[in-house]
Image (cartoon, rainbow, N blue to C red; front, side, top):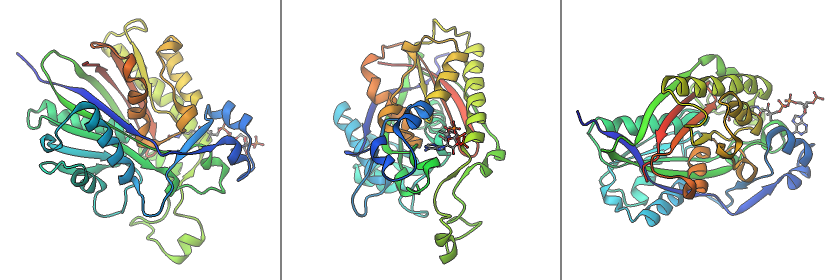
Length: 329
Ligand code: UT7
């Protein structure tokens, strides 16, 4: 039987020009370059400046970069998914506006929210549509303007996050390439440790919530770190085991860039040579939904057709998981 697999056939990305370095953060909060570098691996992050520019601005730029590079006709796109934790607005999905702006006039579109695992879950969603045979071109964008929800007086969070976006196109493949397997998890125990308290239905925005800084990201870093190290390593080991992959047969680890130490722990559990572990956290920090596609974009020239890629992520919720994908070009 000739089954359809779902493959990534094009990649695009965008990061804003403005660089916020550790040195500049030293002037904003009580921190230092040495602490940030040794505890996280981050040297700088990008920040989207300018009035009335939201996550859609980043997403549109990433999609346009993909369209230019690949020569894709946007009218052929069947659906657009934007994975984001920072939509332009709570109501009116960012993806719908993005689809219209890039000329995807025949697509339907919606947002997907799973914090730092948004893009990983989106890969599963996009691929399920392709594998079902219902759609032929699904554009998945991971985009976040984290600077819009970060308190730049809170050293526990402001040193970590940055803004950025990446996009990939999923299409059917008849050579067996593309998504091979996935292992996705979630656990509501996590919502106390990484959250924005206010602005949702539980605690709508009010004068008090603004005064109490409850619209910013709160993170109990130590606890999240503990769960992330175990979670990401477990799912990565699991997906290798059930697909009979060894550290030799895995070509690349594409891991969520939240903290260099979490990535190293995952790679070590997989017994991977460090040359296979893709890292760009030093340049962008944690861009939430954008970390995985930004890695694909930065390292695209290294991938060869048939390469075995393991994707892994961990984020708020908690949400986490791994995906095994064979590169298709
Ligand atoms: O992407 C979504 C998932 N998120 C994550 O995966 C993030 C997981 N968490 C982390 O990456 C780490 O927990 C952090 C980078 C957030 C923090 O690193 P840590 O090694 O867990 O530090 P800590 O919170 O245990 O703090 C250690 C010390 C404390 O001082 P004392 O109590 O030992 O005197 C903190 O007050 O470092 C202090 N500290 C800082 N010092 C300088 C905390 N933040 C800073 C800072 N600069 N920015």
